[in-house]
Image 1 (cartoon, rainbow over the protein chains, first blue to last red):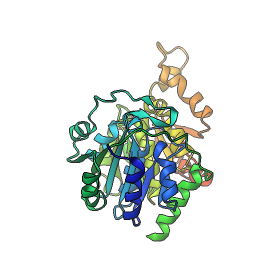
Image 2 (cartoon, each protein chain N blue to C red; image 1 turned 120 degrees about the horizontal axis):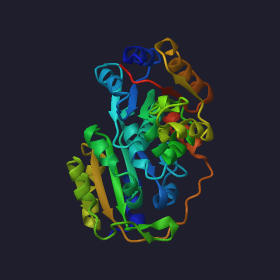
Image 3 (cartoon, chains in turn cyan, orange; image 1 turned 135 degrees about the horizontal axis):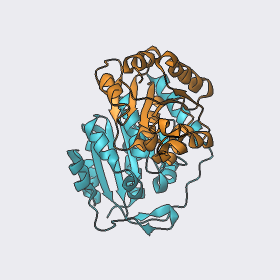
Image 4 (tube, each protein chain N blue to C red; image 1 turned 180 degrees about the vertical axis):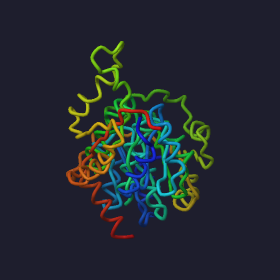
Length: 189
Length: 164
């Protein structure tokens, strides 16, 4: 099993100017590593809608990679997104499903299907070919190049240990974070 | 009936780059015309909540999207609406098909419940709207886009007739 904090540290060390979308139990740990205009915490936003929001960004910004770090509980809320992404593919779209089997920030209740569900099978069944399940550090390191440079749409499933992040709280309001991202993208065009 | 051609012309006039939505009987002809319109890309979603999120991403990425969904899908999308276009303050046009509009006429043989819920829900969610019943009123689309731009919030135009 992977440790999500180690994974995030490796991601942060490798990352340059990609857009990174986070939510729920990933948002604050990622903020501790990186908090610039291209880091977008999808918190106080539509539940389950980080992956499709990222799809829209990737469509509008085809020359910039968009990486979404999506909890498995959030993914389950909007599985149709995988089909929508497959039928309107974008090369720069990378979705990571961080699978710990629980709703971490509400006390680690089990998500439906925990232990049975196979997100790789679901993503492939939705029509996405480049899907990778990663459950150990060696494989994680080996596949990092694909996450940053592979032709999308890409879906990764990280099998991670449970953790205990609280409900994330951000002093910068969602609309401020959103328009900060837009401004940074417009200025870098 | 509403002319799909006139609606598409209004959208083009406003520089809409993407229509994000899901077709229904009322918007079928409009979608068919949009798919043939080079200036506007149609992003078809699996469920209407995605449309709010995708359109938000497209807008923040620098393009000019609008939504095209039916009122049934709009009601389904509550938290998606709240957590994306509303909380992110996205100035976006929502074209919403008004299924059941005619069943609200007094004496109609049956009432479609989605029609009874639509306007109260728009009011509850603070979405300004107008109702498009005739091609002569097509400029409501441009007015809706302007309203959204002026407030940096969503504005809706309800399509009360099938498009032809």
